[in-house]
Length: 152
Ligand code: SF4
Ligand code: SF4
Image (cartoon, rainbow, N blue to C red; front, side, top):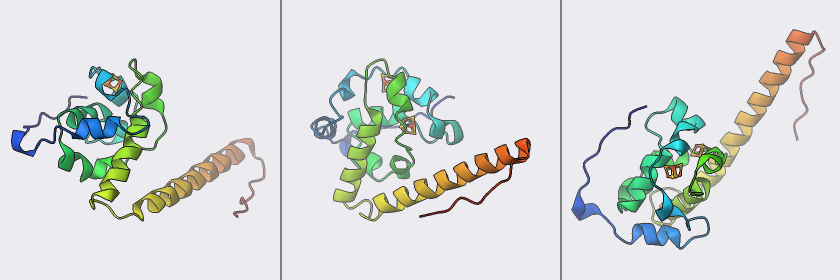
């Protein structure tokens, strides 16, 4: 999938942004990224939303686009599934970078602190939905008796 080109305004660049992120655990290999795109190619969110690109987010961080990155809704879309990390030849830990970006977004007032709990709740509900759909589907195709799972 071809990524959108964007015009970078030099006045809005924060040259300390990348270093700030590197200083957090998980940020160590950020500058080793050579923009190969393997992370984006294997990402389940990029597959359904072309505005979400780990490769592009890393470029934006390296270019110091602090406000654009921290205010972007895309930093909340990541599933933290570590698929991109497994594919990355440079061992750039993108999921941990996302955790840092979310922390900084909240700290800088771009997002509310409750956002982390909301996302955890959404993920839990989606896992229940997926689990039940699969269980229902298996039961339907094996004629096994389907039982509603009990929830805590
Ligand atoms: S896979 Fe790794 S090196 Fe390649 S673009 Fe993604 S983060 Fe950079
Ligand atoms: S951790 Fe996030 S960016 Fe990486 S593959 Fe999973 S959803 Fe995509």
